[in-house]
Image (cartoon, rainbow over all chains, first blue to last red; front, side):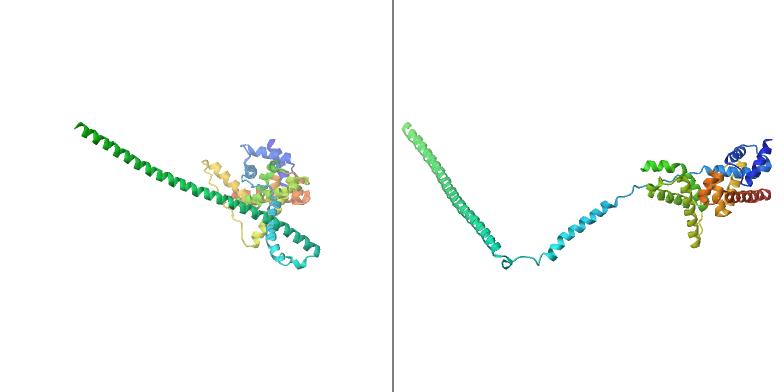
Amino acid sequence: MVLNSIEKLLEKYDNGETSLKEEQQLKDYFAQDNVAPHLESYSVMFQYFKTTKQELYTKDVPLKPKKNFVYQWISVAAVAVLMLGIFIPNVLGGSDSLTLADLSAEEREVYFQTKEALAMLSSNFDKGTSSLSALSNNFNQGASSFNALSLASESFNVGAEKASYVNKLGSTTNKFLKNTKNK
Amino acid sequence: MTQTDFVKLVMPFKDKVFRLAKRLLVSNEEAEDATQEILMKLWRNKQKISDYKNVEAFSMTMTKNFCLDRLKSKQAQNLKIVHSNYQDHNTSLQKEVENRDSVDWVSKIIEELPEQQKIILQLRDIEEYDFDEIAKVVDMNPTAIRVALSRARKTIREKLTNTHSYGVK
């Protein structure tokens, strides 16, 4: 009875007319052990289908989030700007330096005024430096007199030493005198 | 779409993509490369994924086209894809060995089928797609699919019965 219906299903199956449900029925039938011997070839087929379905894809897929290329280009742009900054003044800057002749009368006047003001400032600076140098001269004098003082103190020390010799001499003469007295 | 969303979306059918690729390309490594390529393509176009009605069917179509292209280019180079998926299964029982051999035999028979039939058989008998889905993937009408499927099934069984009755492999 079961075999009969399976055979019918197989015929439909061979003609490609079975539904998925019916195919599942066939698969279930051939998954068990006691299969009719004349259906052995089907059993091999279904077994193959079953085993193949268990095959899995195990490799990892390297999924990288999309790189933002804008950031990479920003560095390129920065370098370009830098290079332009270095080269453009060299290439263009040489030609447009101004001379006095290029200026109008008014501009020239302003220029000279500025120059005068700056000269005044610098002369004041000079005064400041001269007074500073006078101060430093005084300092030097002080330092030299200090040196003289230290020299004097040194000679004083020498004198003191000599005085102590004199003292010793005095004490020995005293002892000598005592001895002669005792005699 | 984040990476986890994408993985969730792709997870259910990545094995099917791999199996279809392997059905067509035979070699394990080639199939792995193809699967990776397909998944990378999907990932690159992830903004457009939501526009597709059926991502799975779309991916299967992509896989089919990719593998067929691959085969074509290999043939043009006069190179055959050689597979080296020989595995050593130590099975003690004679019966198991025999079954294993027959099962390998099935895969060899399927290898000899025309590409179209291979794809249809793969999608129907292994992945259990219904005819409408298969129609989307292979771009054929259901009747033609049924015919191709019937032919494939009959060929396999015929060859199998021959092997069994002759007892030679």
